[in-house]
Length: 379
Image (cartoon, rainbow, N blue to C red; front, side):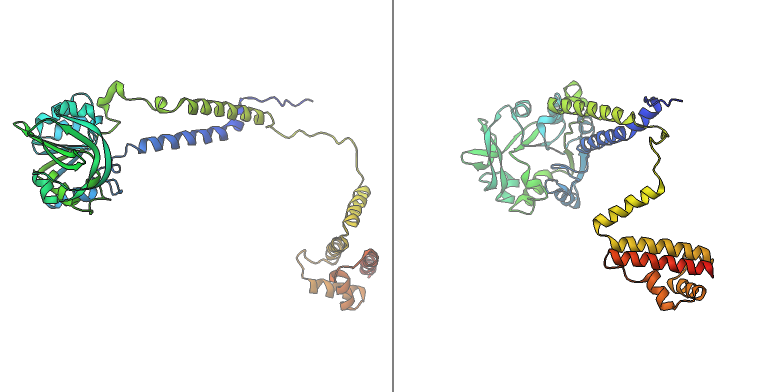
């Protein structure tokens, strides 16, 4: 009768289910990490974030002063919420399409944090970015009420240049301002080179709190727009998760997947019921015992061999005397002594005494154990 050892579907599934479960777990963890980046309760300049780069502290102060703060994360939400008042955009370059132009028309005061050239060209074509500067404490040196009232603040970041004589320039780094405000008939636009003074970590430094309160609290309604990369309005411009993964990682993941499948198939071929086969030879019990004794002798384990002999003798004596397997040493010694007529101390020394020091002692112990068993059997 032959037994098939080739893998079937059930055996293959049993072999690959654990690697597949691990691979699925890795994918789920990776997706969770990617999706967690879109969490709207944390992030840079997020009004609900308690992190050092969040802005919960400023948002809370504004609300205590009676300002109605509305956090939004998509252009659709922003267009729905703005109705006059103040609008602050933390990442103007992420606003999709002509959203900046539409928002500019709907608010009385637009505040842009670290806008790039494209965002400036849409909202303030007379202002351009001319490089970057270190974030540091700068003096206002201008006539803007919010800046004058705040005094020195943590500014820097993007440096600006403008030829508009009506533009008010503050917090200069050298000759270039890092704060520009332009007011016209459609409203006021303020650009800051960095959002650092509005963060939880920097709000208590210098005049940052006063600057944020005066700049964003000039109207009773404030829409706080933190553009999200998951905004559906980004449409075709939004890359998929697969496109965001570098090519090297994709090839590495594919190679690892192939290796896992091959390993699973290799292991699956050994699954199945155990096949019984006759032994090529029959080993007699006496030969097994002799081989074990030689191993004890080679290792110098006279004590271990003696304990093996004693345990075997005690087991036979308990059976012959009707004692339970867990009988205590005192009960065994007392019963054997009563049946054999030997002194209890002598019986205890034979059955539970110290191990012999050499092979001669082991031989004497074996003879004494045989004698005790014969005496109990004859009694």
